[in-house]
Amino acid sequence: MAREFYRADRVADAMRRELAQLIQKEVRDPRLGMVNVNDVEVSRDLTVAKVYVTFVGEDDRAVINTSMEVLNKAAGFLRTQLARAIQIRTIPRLQFRYDETSVRGQELSALIDKAVKADREHHADDSSDAGEDKSAGADLDADGARRATTKDGGSQ
Image (cartoon, rainbow, N blue to C red; front, side, top):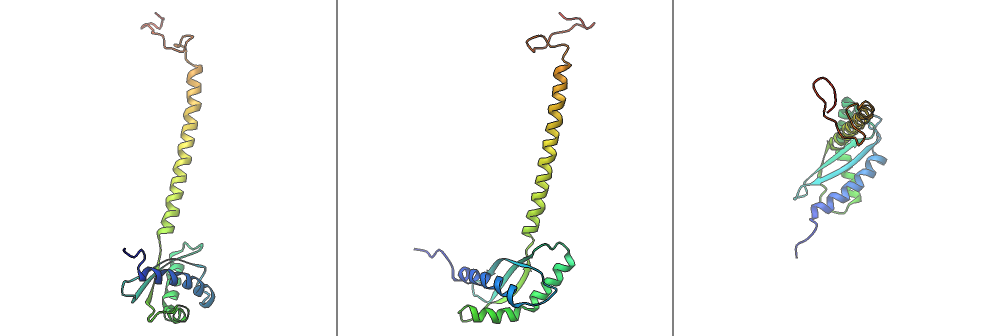
């Protein structure tokens, strides 16, 4: 029977949990705001870990770049702290990367909401126009069917 989880996956999950706490409690740099650790990908040989992060409430690209520099400079310190918390022979080298998927998801969600709102307004306008057409229906008979009219406007 095949294993369901690889060792790299288990190490990545443990690192994600520990890094979220360590960054919050141990990294004391005023340039670094609230950090979310979204994912950790560890190579199969456990030498490199890519840590994907986002910053709460930050849209300014300059602030994000500064925060990424702070995290990448603190990578050695965080690796040492991870070695104390996780009992494995070697701790992977940390590479922090900005995760744009959540930001892109929020942009797409906003676009979808805007399109739905515009569609509802468009349908509301159509229904009010349709109400005007029914009241102005001079060539409709009592059953609501169209009557044939002649060229001079008289009915047949």
